[in-house]
Length: 172
Image (tube, rainbow, N blue to C red; front, side, top):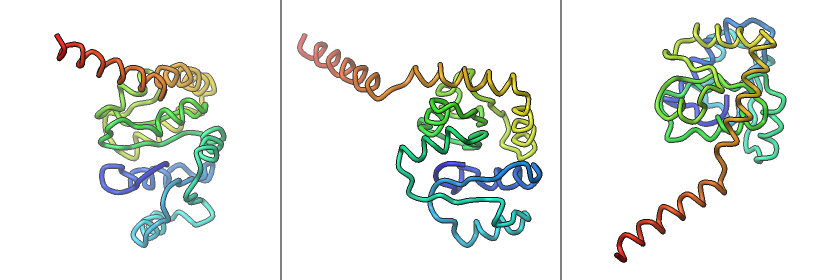
């Protein structure tokens, strides 16, 4: 799990799902230090401290390494303006499980497992589906292709062209 954990980010759904995945997985939480409520939530869901790790203040390079070794990015957000972590994960070869909500489907295309409902059991089923090595490899390859559609250089060029077009229209 990467990013802010409050409200619409649905960190609680990841915790609930993780509880039922068994000991085959380790929950890596990237972002700010856990607050008291989050620690209590983990404890109430019987997730022992040795079954999760919190990483704070990661550089872009370290985050990229994490994505390279992660089994999956769980991103249960109910709203995204864009969703940079999705692209970061896909460009690093990390499969993505997210929601079929907001801008997420446009960002990930067909390169992620998208869930229509933010329910823990849906995330569990999706994580377990990636145990199929063919599906996992397909998601990784699609993720590489999808991520190539986005770049800061492309964003810059398209934004610059947009403003040039507006300026041309104003000068007519």
